[in-house]
Picture (tube, each protein chain N blue to C red):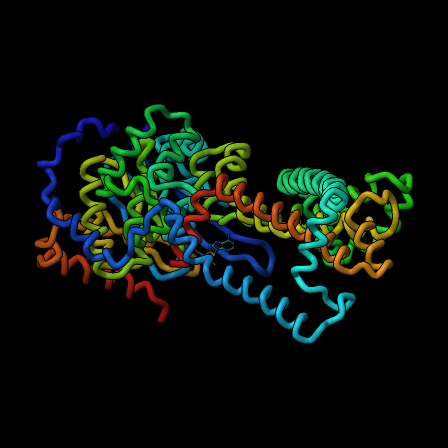
Length: 256
Length: 297
Ligand SMILES: Nc1ncnc2c1ncn2[C@@H]1O[C@H](COP(=O)(O)OP(=O)(O)O)[C@@H](O)[C@H]1O
Ligand SMILES: [Mg+2]
């Protein structure tokens, strides 16, 4: 009985059949410990989203074994063990910011919804925007609402699929800082998909480097950067060294 | 894990310097107000339309007088109003009967349309078997069946007119509502799946709210269509105390100003039904109205 949050062994995923068959993932083995921040990085199409969706039981593996919090992924989903954030904020247009954050609480019949929503909006620094509609917020603010919503029911695991991919560089850096702070405050385990090398290095304990056709894990790099990570971290030598290390790991996997 | 232990734990965060900057950086987005535009503002926006309406009526009056246009071609507005007032007993009685036919057809067609739309979500065979047929039927001028419907019931019965109105209303409501229920963002469905939400929850919290704008845009069309359908069905015979027959009789007797007064009643009823839909829409979807007013400003 392990106490890992995510444990994947020899996981494979094949989409379609016959001539249209796509081998998205092959022989994926991954372990994520409680409280860890793990990034999945790799070129587009290498199966990062597919791996994240497997962990969330949003799609089923073709073979291999996968447990989340020691349970089959499906049971973990039914137990509401994880919250998810997509590249698009996916907020419901017809609900105010507060009501969007309350959505999972309503579905899960969790009480004291407005207190919880207010607490979550404070956590993402949007305490004054509860009454606004999503279209009244900027992209960065919408994404923070999506994070508040994903954490509202206090899942032990946060899955994020390129959550800052659509944001401009300035906003993106501020959001990374916000996410690190939230991660510290909530002690949530995070699996974070990105194709930005600096982002992966800054945020993570471990960077999982993936390569395409078929998608597999080519390297796992421990960043070892001290916490808390801030502006100084971005300017440190160790940060640059790790970025170089990840970049080289990615380059090695590029087919000649 | 628990968040409680962090309440009041602000001191631990060394990143506290940045968050407020985000709003400054992103401050280009105007925080539009959610309250509807003030009345004066809205009246001013309606100004050009009211002015255009008054000008058209005035030009109509002026030109028909100046060129002595014959009443059978186009009676002047003042004469139509005069006949409208003089015959108000008869035309409002006819109007009420027509309105009842249209309203019953509207309610019945809408109810059936919504029920079938829900069935297309619930049962795949209904969706795949019925939708193509419904889309095809929607592009056919259903109103052409009016004389046949009359033959199915006793001649003086209002039922065939209600049936024609209901059939005309059914297809747009059913197709639009089904599209609103079905064409939900796949990411939203995935989000609901991550919450392990039941189909009932997904219907209630995602599909139905998403379908409301589709439903109301259909309602705005069919509210007026139901009155057109009832009047056209009346042209093919039945009770005399209805608008269709009134307009038909007056026109065949060359009393055109009276026929136009009947048309005026039909128009007023159409506007009233349309307005009812608009008011309901605003009550049911305040978020959507505010969305549009912000875009317009
Ligand atoms: N639902 C699907 N059906 C068929 N192929 C898919 C599906 N989802 C992903 N794929 C394929 O699997 C591969 C990996 O996709 P994805 O996980 O989205 O990559 P990434 O997120 O790393 O860009 C791609 O070749 C993609 O075309
Ligand atoms: Mg992806």
